[in-house]
Image 1 (tube, rainbow, N blue to C red):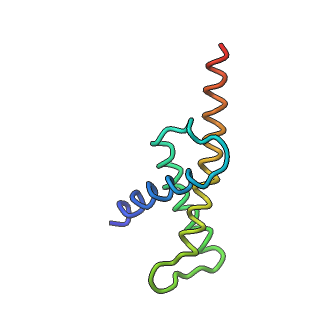
Image 2 (image 1 turned 120 degrees about the vertical axis):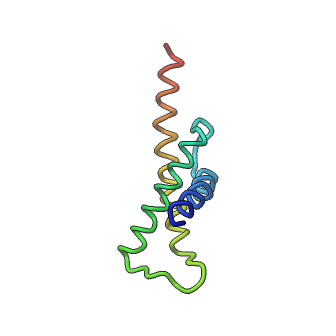
Image 3 (image 1 turned 30 degrees about the vertical axis):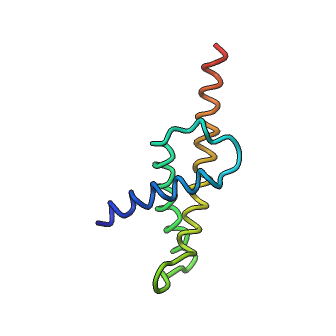
Amino acid sequence: MEIIGVIVAGIIIGLLGKLIAPGDKDNIPIWLTIVCGIVGVLVGWFIYSAFGGNGSAGIDWTRWIVSIACAAVLVMIASTLTGRNTSKLSHH
């Protein structure tokens, strides 16, 4: 159940991260957005735990906000990398 939960959260977090990330994000494929979301969730939870987050009762908004921020950064990085790749290909 945890794996499925992380994947579902990754899809949602990836899309939210893509939504809030600045710049041109349309050149990033949906599968890469989802991967960024899943990694963002895992990294976000790790960072949250490392700084003493112990999970409050109910929905832990702080952990989710950290995860969305991580996913947004990953989406920006992925978008930059894929953007460079496609621009190099189109100039040839």
